[in-house]
Each structure stands twice: as structure tokens, then as C-alpha cells.
Figure 1 (tube, helix red, strand yellow):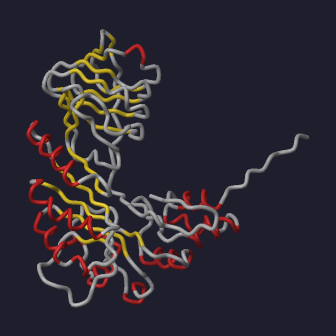
Figure 2 (spheres, rainbow, N blue to C red):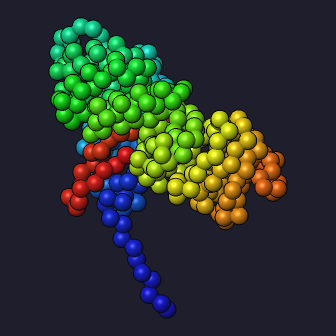
Length: 357
């Protein structure tokens, strides 16, 4: 009988696996092996799935099996049910599966332990808030308040701001970057070429160190491509310049929704890992699509110049004609971007440096 080779899973791999299981599976995962138990011992953050059981009893099990837990991930509804006794054992809370409305949190203690803020008062705190590491702002006023009282948030690492005027946010962002250790995500809408020019000027003046962008438009070869706001920087790792050259390679993007307008032709073959594309065309356009595409969702007729090269394409939505070829009916799965974790220090490792997102 041939000898069966045994594969040994390294602790780092198992720690990454844990972040993808549900909270209800944690207890069973611990029972698999000593290494699985060791993986949980090293993690600083827990998994939390919207599809699994959510209760205070589950939270107590997480506190039991994650001895080095620094941040409890939990949905707002369950967080509001936690007792003072349980909260006393939680170092910090991160609310997940929320639309960024702090009003979801009714429990004052939970709000106090939360690592994320959405509003900043225009007055100094009685004591510094050491729990907050993230801030999400839809209003310029919140950003200026944070700059004024930045010393009250000594551990803040990440800020996201919806921008309506680059001139407004320029000085606050420069002050925040001088402090160091803060990553800033600027989101803005592009409605015309003037807005794009303003962005380029802002980008050159402020710089790109520890600051990144997402927006609802990209340009390539003079083409105006509208991208809805749900395609953000963590999906779209760069931009196209007007001359058609990529500012950064976008090979990491796997799924995208794109709206094309202005009678344009576009070459998207540079998105070499793109497997799912949902595209809306308001006018007749000619596109070159990446050969990695597996699923394609179309809202109207388009001309795909390299259709014969799409050897991996298996599913297409709607009965449309592309270069004379009738496409089969298919509906794309819905997107879920609600789970958000920006941690780069989620677990301990004695083996190597690593990040977990």
C-alpha cells in the first residue's frame, strides 16, 4: 500500500482560516486539533458572520476561546443586548454589518468601547478616547473638529472622508498627515472633467503618502467611465490617467460595476484578474475586455472587439448580441460590502511578519 503523505498546516494559515468561519463554528474548530486551538490563542480579532447565530452567549464563547482578543467584532443589534458584566471583559468593540450610522448603538457602554466614530463634537472631551482607531465622515465639519481635537484621539489610524471640495479638506489633511501614523481615504464624485483636474491638482499638492482615493469615475484614452461609489479603493487599487497609462496596476480587482457613457471606446484588458464584470452602456460603445472574465452582466448592446479571446467566459446576463453572438440568460449574485475590517495587527505570530484584513 502506498504511503499517504500528510500535510501540516502552519499556524499562520489556520489563523487566516479562523477569520472566515462563523462565530458558531469556533467551538468545533477548537476541537479539531491543538494547532487550531493555538491559532485562536494568537488572534486579536474574532470572526462575525451575519449568517450565523448572534447572541450574548456566543459572545461569551468568543471571549473564552480568544484569550488575546483586543477587538470584538459584532453587529449593532447584538451589541445593544450585551450586559455590563460581559462588556467589562471586552477591550474594544468594532461594529460590523452597519451602514455607518452611530444611532444604531443605543448602549452607552458599547458606544464608549467602539473603535469607530462617525461624528466629532466641537468641544473637548473630558478624557481622551483611547478606543477609537477609525473615523468615517460624510461632512467637512467633522474633519475640522477632529483636527482641532486630534490629541483627544491618540490611537486613531484610519480616516475616511467624503469630499465635496478639495480646497476645504486640503489644510486639515495636511495637518493630519504631519501627525503621522494615519491613513486617509478620500472619497469623491466626478461629474465632469473639471472635477478630475481639481483632483489631480489636489493629489500633487497633498501627495500620496498614507493617503488614497476612490471615486465614481476613471479615465482611459480620453474615455469617461463612471464607476458607482460602491467600487472603492480597496477594490480598485489605482486610477487611469487621461493618457491611457495606469497610475497603478489594477490586477488585484476581481469584481467591478462600471457604467460607460459619452460614445466611447475603452480598453479594460489591463484588469488581468477581473472575473466578474457588470457593465451599463448608455450609448453604443466598443470595449476590449480582460480574457480572465468568467461572468458578464450587460444592460444594453455593446461591441466587444476581442470577444473571440474571452475563452474563460461562461455566463452572461440578458439576451443581448455581441458581434452577432446571442448571449445566454444569467443573473449575477448580489454584492455585500458591509463586512469591513481594516486591521493590520489581528494576531500574534512567532514565525513571521504578516497582515490580516
